[in-house]
Length: 462
Image (cartoon, rainbow, N blue to C red; front, side):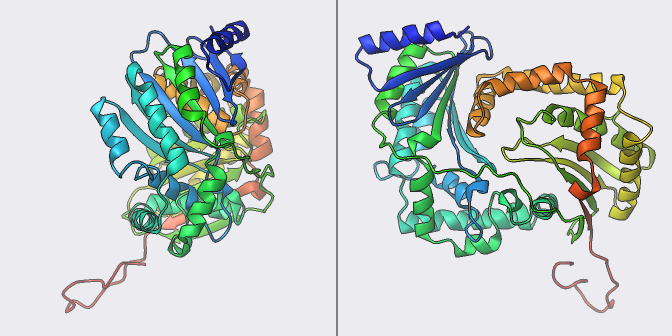
């Protein structure tokens, strides 16, 4: 298990080998051997979670930048940069990054969220330094020429049209979040709005990259089968030369704008949707574990309250789900129901709201429901921690959200200790009408057309 003493001894070993500009910060319990946290002189942090039994190594690069760090009128920049990072640098032509990794049997991907952007690779232990070399290059020398930016911007615009504008479920999520958060940081979509993407300029992208992609705003997470001392030496070699620049200040203000109580949407789909969300708490809030359990009680399995009422008994919905989001400034407890053809969002609403009222009234959460919800969450957690990639993901998300690494362990301890009274209290505190947004989404009303028209309806319905 990683310890402060081991970290301090490792620091002495590195110094004796001439490795300079690296500092041991702390060690925490995590996974099979704990996690050590280190910092380079330029501010970049390293989180090491070794596992001698793992045959591979996950290398993640996490940047404290997401769509919540964008400003009105220039949304989509964080996601656009995620795309651009896989193209050319000023030292390597496009395609080099993927080709080199593929030659070594490695895989790579990336993701952007409201609070962070991450890049991850899974490689053989012998190729960790190769990843460091490639990642350091694109952190410092990304090609943001006019041609490169405009080319990738067109790719993202097409992605938005295909995966959001033409996807009913994506439109439902986007509309719900906008209604819940309005003009505040979580109110605009991660991919950016269509209007903003159409108006982005090359200079916007360059300025965002230079301000946010700095060592002090970045952490490299390494998990799996590796020698920590060798990895630290390689990290100092490849990342130590990155120029130190101050990290931009992030907003720490929770959402205050009142959510819309309801809204409606016409979806070009064969069936309607109902979505409900309550503005709740950030991921380090004391009520967050209880709300995660509450979501499981409501719609986490075929025996959950909403599933039984909406899917099995009434057969109004074909599926229903619920979740409590993990966000830095305050999240949502969300419920989504996909309806059966011919059923309306109003019919689904008439079933869903009484279930909630029943839970808040005379039919509180039972011990059996809580135990089942707890077991499902813990099973998901164990699956996540079963791989080096999953462990790196947990550590990176925690760090990029500005939290100490102990938050993860404390969260699961709270899950283990949670009582029915605590879950019931969280429900009463947060499932309030003034925190709620309800979205009714129905297909367009079909009208009959003259039989002489050879193509039926003209254009897209709605």
